[in-house]
Image 1 (cartoon, rainbow, N blue to C red):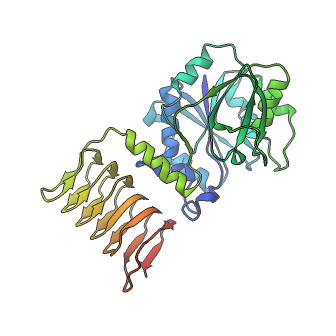
Image 2: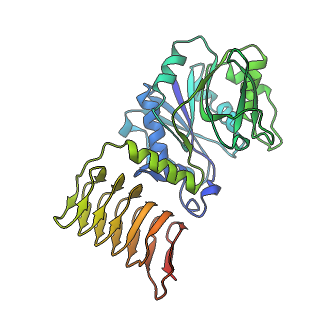
Length: 357
């Protein structure tokens, strides 16, 4: 089997964080979401991976970050998509890479509990033409949803219905054989101007092909919004195997479920997990609370922070109130100003400089 990872899109729901950075490269628990997807595909035994990217600066960033895939022991082929014309369009333009092989398609900004090894094994040893992963969601109108028959088979799929007939959402993991190319070549663009993968799968159902539903019982998160990023960070931090590889002085208190990466320093501070502190980051006279990820080369000094994601090369100094529930981008400088508000909630893009009022 081959892997197809979709890594295009502007990430507009994460603005301003993604004005200058690809959304798939925003880290969850100090590892870019796209890297987690590549590892999930590799861990399922797939080493030939195509990544669909745009033709903008975000695509350049993804290419530079991923390279040829050597660090994961996989071979990566980049497939340019001139415009975001839908998931089925991404499949269509990947035909040369995929050939007639079975493949798994994985959205590059999704995080799923437990990986996909079991799913790949099921599909590889079956005669199904497709397998789709579903999970129950609270707001199905925001997703493609599936209606199942009494026998559990897929009857109908609808993309972002105004009146959802089901709460079973497609979670962005699909498996197909070569018959999917018949489908993507037969369907027409939707009212959004896109070739919808739900329409392609519906075409398979309507033409008698076998589409097997798999209902995922664990957590799954589409990291498209700031709250989703923080939620994904929470889940992954809870599952990490934590270890201290950096320096912690004797005046500091660090709980067991904390990772301190190489070159990081914790001085006269309290760190409560689950939390991860990145390489060459300094925590001085500060409190870092649970569910916080601080990336590489940051400084947190004389401040308190909890339930946040802080990206690389950012500085937080002398802040008189605790920072919570925030996404803070790269090269941000957050320092004390003369005035003292009671609370802070921030989503900051790269290279921001903020004086707290």
